[in-house]
Image (cartoon, rainbow, N blue to C red; front, side, top):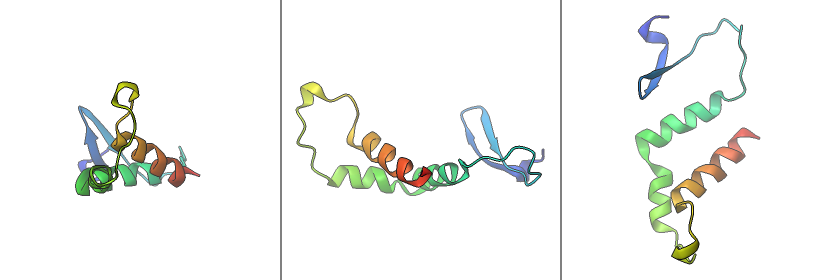
Length: 77
């Protein structure tokens, strides 16, 4: 594949696209949403605004991680 088929890079791994139809995936929208989030950081900004009333002693996931899971989960349905 040529460089023009590369959507973005994640570490040393490139995320590619083509329109051959050999491998069809329903996850394309999630990749696009993640790219938009990386560029604009909307969920990060929302997570800073939303109040977090949880007890810090019991927190496993940050508010940003929770928002990403919720938004990407809705987009995947």
